[in-house]
Image (cartoon, rainbow, N blue to C red; front, side, top):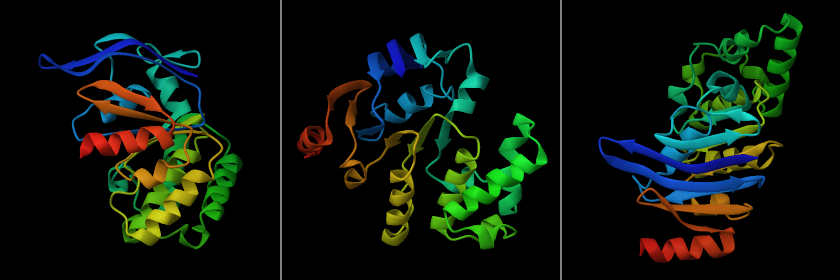
Length: 224
C-alpha cells in the first residue's frame, strides 16, 4: 500500500504538488495530465527521486523521507528514455550492475540475468552492445534492469513515447505481464484502458480519481 498524507512539493515559490492525500492499493494505476501538471513529480516521490516539501509519503512500511535507499530497492523506476537508464556497454554487464549492491552469490546473479533475458526473448543479445539494440529492445532492457532487482512496485514514466507501434505493443505486453504493482505515467490513453484506477493531474492537484472508463473521457473533455 502507498499512502501520501498532505504532500506538497514546492519549487521556487511554485507548488508542483499541493496537499495530495491518496491511498493506493490497486494493482494497475494510470497517471495522466498535461505537461507540467505535476504527474512526474508525483511518481518520483514514490521511490525517493523527489522529496516532499511537506507531508509524508509511505510505501508499505517505508518512509520515503527516511528510508530512501531501501525504498529504491522495492520501488523500481523505468524512465521514458532507456538511454538514460542503460549504464554499461554490454547487455549482461548492464543487468549485473544493479545487483552488485545486493551482494548476491554469483550463481544467483547469473540465474536472475538468464531468466529475465529469456522472458523478453533477449537471450541471444546477452553479450550484445547495449547501444546497438533497437528502441524496443532498449526499453525491454531497461525494464529487465528493474525486474532483476525483484521490486514490489514498478513505476513507468512515459514508457511508449519514443517507440513505433510494433515496439509500443511489445512493451505494453511486457507491462501487462508483470506480477508487481504498476504505476504508469502516460499520454497513451489506450495503454491504461484496462487499468484499475486513473489519476488525472492538473496544476499540482488530483482533479479526477476514477476508473479508466470514467476518468479517460473526462480527461479528454478537459483537454478539448
